[in-house]
Image 1 (tube, protein in one colour):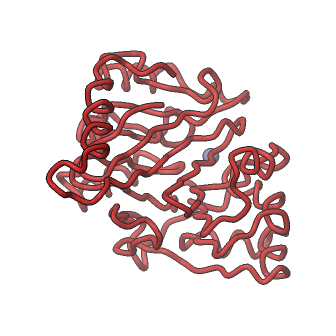
Image 2 (tube, protein in one colour):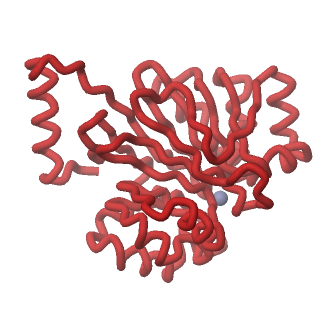
Image 3 (spheres, protein in one colour):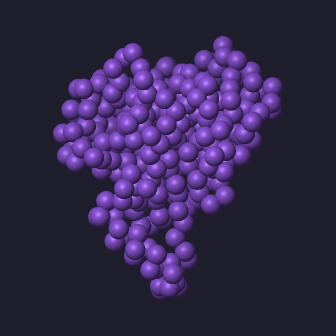
Length: 278
Ligand SMILES: [Zn+2]
């Protein structure tokens, strides 16, 4: 993606400030957020200093290990699996044993599904730690950015797409929201829990399915950018009605992005300063 002109000034100003040590402030830290092109599925690489983490691992056999190595990543502090469907966790087949993984975070529904899945057994066989996340938890290694797990609540009766871990990462200047395959029913429940939730960059739920991204939800979030993680698929993702709803909120169509068209999509966050697309 090209830098829109509107983003050149912040970048230039940032370089000026960090170059001259303006005001004696500590150097701004950066967080790279890259939605990887992994076909029909999700994998989002976070890089912060020497730390690298992954939100979902994409589907099986999409070369996720090589994709990471090409970016100089040979170990991951953690992998968060939003839910147990193969288009989000199948890539762990490749990663386990090839890329060091400190821990795998899962939601409440995922453990049950993984008990039936050889990915789960592969992780255990290699001694990769697994742990659960719920609403109210945060993710390690991202400071000074704040990470908040917003969904699901502990004890919630959720399954499949509705069990998707929802995570917001950023600071008071900008944030992005990762929703996995969350459906509209859970979007409504999340709005009740978070009536003032807003985001700058939304990972569009369930690859642009019609059953996600309800107008009240995306209207409340009011994102500046939407990223649809999608590849060739038999379900018509992203659905035309979902794109139409997104267009009502994001008037600039160049800010509704798709991994099947743009390839991997990266943003850089600068602490206290906002973000820009790369
Ligand atoms: Zn999915």
